[in-house]
Length: 103
Image (cartoon, rainbow, N blue to C red; front, side, top):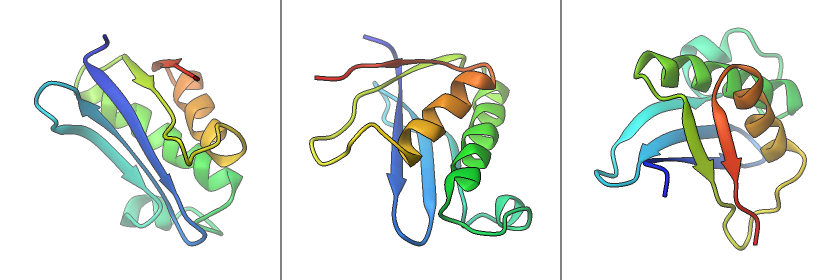
């Protein structure tokens, strides 16, 4: 079991993602399109470029806390496609090794 896990939430209005420590349940890195630094550079807060920006900012913040690997297991209601896949792909492109466990 990896100590860090990725959690993502995508709605029609915004996108947010976080990296959480599995034992202590503390969030070590958080990024979302509602934060001021990301909101300022985006045209829309719920499209694919917004997902890529959230992944990039989350990767930067995770690296600041020395986290370079995490796992992602989608919930039953989540489909691993489209926007969610874009966030995970952006994390991988920016230096975070994400292991995806699909059932």
